[in-house]
Amino acid sequence: MTELKAVVKLPLFDGKESNFCNWWARFKAYARVHGFADVLTDEKPALLGDTESDPKHFDETSHSEVVKMYKKNAVAVSQFTMSFTNDECMGYVFKSITS
Image 1 (cartoon, rainbow, N blue to C red):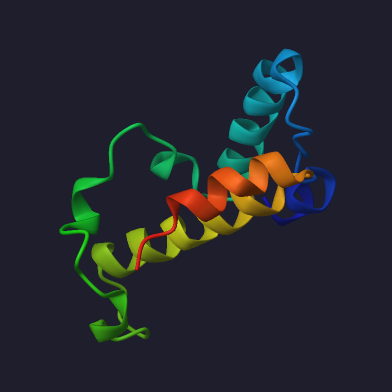
Image 2: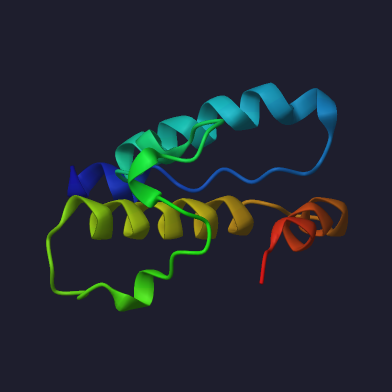
């Protein structure tokens, strides 16, 4: 799988509605290769728990499913954010950030 990571590059989204379906299909394929496709859902994964939960209280060396899910979610949010190429898309990111 490591070899695929070098080949599958993060797809970029230019904000054009006509390009969304192709970008989303490519982004999901990228997520599958990089191991975070299971957190790309309409609903928050149950393991992430309460929105007030703070992952910092987990032992980062732990291999619990909760820690793994937090890490996957962090990777997904990071890659999703990095795929946007214009200010309009980034505006949606900024609006979605919670305290």
